[in-house]
Image 1 (cartoon, rainbow, N blue to C red):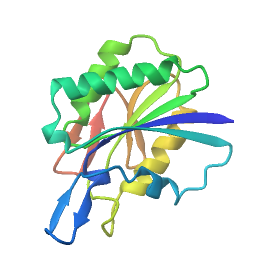
Image 2: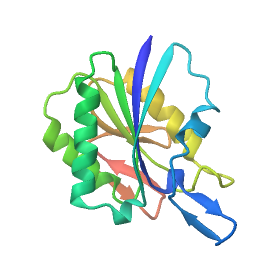
Image 3: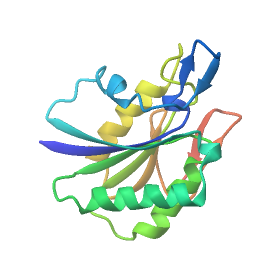
Amino acid sequence: MRHVTIITTGGTIEKTYDERTGALENTRSIIHRMLGRLRLEKTEVGVVELMSKDSLHMTDEDRARVLEAVRGALADEGTSGVVILHGTDTLEMTGDLLARSLGSIRMPVVLTGALRPYEMKRSDALQNLTEAMFAASALPPGVYCVAHGQALRFPGVRKNRDRGTFEGGS
């Protein structure tokens, strides 16, 4: 049995539409709805709902909270991988911080997000979550960005806004 810890921070992947205001915002985590759509054989999932923020509004203090949550997951002997749901606009900043700060780790730490919210048609959210869950069990130890059929190792991952995906990595 594998145990994957998911840390949610918000981002586009978890934005929801408010019919009263017409706003598309981060108000609460929707990870349990997303996980309900997946078939995860021999995988136990623990969820840490850390925050619900657009990554453009994340501060250095927020990134420090992510780092501490990851350190907590890494300290859990039963955990075999970590997935972080994160906004794509500043995912690279958090990934670079984790790669710099964590040093040698014993499992993969995977950041993922989406360019379109889970609730919207043609969203990449469920695909990216599925790939991240698999990657957290299959990749060697390190910090990665997993999205759109690719796994890129930090540092050096960058969002390519023109292509709508990520590139680079070490």
